[in-house]
Image (cartoon, rainbow, N blue to C red; front, side, top):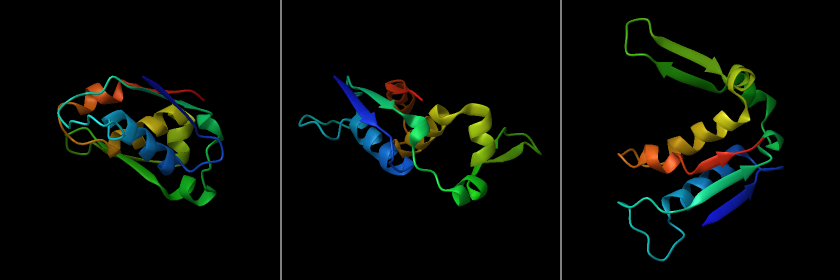
Length: 114
């Protein structure tokens, strides 16, 4: 089954939470938390999402390599310039999925188009 979500004039978190619910299969009658649903979610118009100027400057994305001195932070503005809107959506949805072995399999069913 394929779902399409239009992100035009919507907030990032609202679209991401809707996509996460569909990817987990919570909207189906036969929901099971230990099964990956056969659902593809396509987010269109990702670059037309509403993103406040203040949030672009102040929101930070943190990565850690595991080594001493390996903590790196980027603002949302820098993250957008380097990766684009599609990775912003992927990161938001990935954070909303349950942390288990199915997480990597579920996120593969997300397609983002700018």
